[in-house]
Length: 79
Picture 1 (spheres, rainbow, N blue to C red):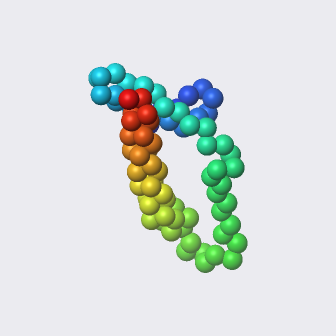
Picture 2: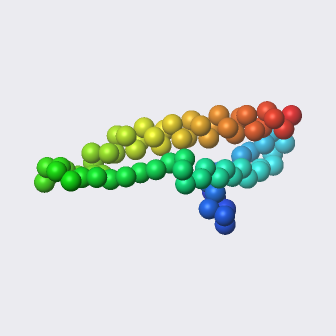
């Protein structure tokens, strides 16, 4: 489950093999991800959401894969 904390870090809850859970949070920092939208000169029919949706969906999938990878690595490091 995705979660975060009061410090603005991104994170998720990890189920451990002993049926407990732990919260893992990462501070990615502002310099890790940047987004800039420049649509000057774009056609009038340009729709930011529908145009960028495939890229955002792909990025979402990549982030979810990384969460699984980091969760497994974290659990393995505990044992």
